[in-house]
Amino acid sequence: MDPAPQSHPILSYVLARLPTLAKLRPPAAAGEFDIEQPPVHTPSPRTPSTAGEFELVERMPGLRHPSVLRAMTRAVADVSAARSALQVLGPRPDHELVDSSRAIVAAAEAGDGDGGSRIPEADLEACRAVVRLEETHDAYEALLQEAEGRLEAVYRSAMQGKDLEESESDGRGESAAAGGAEAGDAAVQEEVIAVLRQAEEGMAVESVRLVDRQLRHLPEAFGRIQGLRVLDVSRNQLEVIPDAIGGLDHLEELRLASNALIFLPDSIGLLSNLKILNVASNRLRSLPDSISKCRSLIELDASYNGLAYLPTNIGYELVNMRKLWVHMNKLRSLPSSICEMRSLYLLDAHFNELCGLPSAIGKLSNLEILNLSSNFSDLKELPATLGDLLNLRELDLSNNQIHALPDSFGRLDKLQKLNLEQNPLVMPPMEIVKEGVDAVKEYMLKRFLDILLEEERKSIAAAESPQAPTTPSAWLARSVSWVSDVSGSLVGYLSGENKTEKDAYLDQQY
Image 1 (cartoon, rainbow, N blue to C red):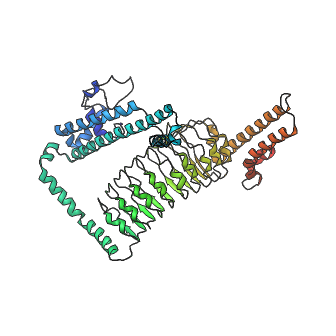
Image 2: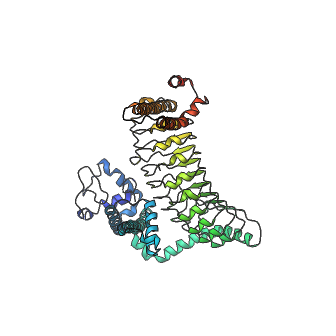
Image 3: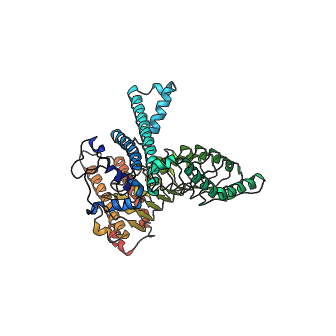
């Protein structure tokens, strides 16, 4: 849960009235604010800081009910305990490290003779520690999620202005409300039944679109509609997708956006013909590893979820992927296997917690659109292989902490759109950045060539020194090596395809 008061005003309101929580730990340092231990004070109606509070109570009168406050107190205590435990545990281990550690431990426990016996006991214990840390994180995050769910339930009661004890004692009233909801769902159920009956009667059903129907349950029978190619149940209230979905052998398009899904079934990996999968705007914490088996997948939208990582092997098998949207998640890194998606055209990973890119990102030779904006304080540098994305046309690096572009940046000859706003850039200087993408490319290319020329001068000087070998073969090997390194960078320029009037200086250098 985001602890910011502006994101959770009701939680902040309740915590401000629980001074006992503030005594559990030492007060925060001066200038810091811990939402779990807010300063104890008596607010004045005239102070600007409390204006939002009175507006909140006026809009949600349920916050004044003692039973609401008591219920929220219990939930807040659990949230506080879970968050404290997670802070003590520290950051989660890298997902790829967890996967490899689990594989090593499994091999050792299986007694594979050659597999487990060669692993030193110290290394094996380190792998077990990684696995235990990951499992402990899972346990406390599950507790945190359950407590957050209870808080949300209290929020809803507060917004309705109802006393919780009165609502709980009036079971018949709730039953009546549920009955009304069921009556409202009758039309949707009839529509679902009509689709299933049509399939059972042998009629061709290739497309089912049940969008924005307040659908709460997807029947298992949908997995038996053999000719189904498109299933769109976006903008509903689905919390679970049945395992039977894996029986849709011919399904090519599955749209599950804007539901309440917490996980996807492993059987989704059986959809070998699936080309488009949209699970945006759900509550997913992870994607199943089996998704890598959807080898026909060309578009995956998993944006607006709570993903902390992507499956380790996702790129090794999804080699046909063209568009990947994973923005608005909590990704700390991208798996190295993503660099094997050689067909990838678009990668949008903005608004995450990325600390960097895989070192082999340059292998994405067909990538044309890359958005890494708004990773804020986490993204500080880019790998040198970024310059190998020779087909890149659009690049957004805004709202990060990047101080310098890689020296190879000038090789991005096809780059047309570049956003570097809100970065503490030193290289290139801001006056160059303000002149636009062409100025940045020219500056970085000149810098790149100067570096290559300086390295060659040093190489020649070393070759002429008395200590250096003087055999023709050694000198020739060095020269050929340098030419090989440089030729790939210059061939596009020397061909004249992309020259402009600004290239006069570079022509002179050549």
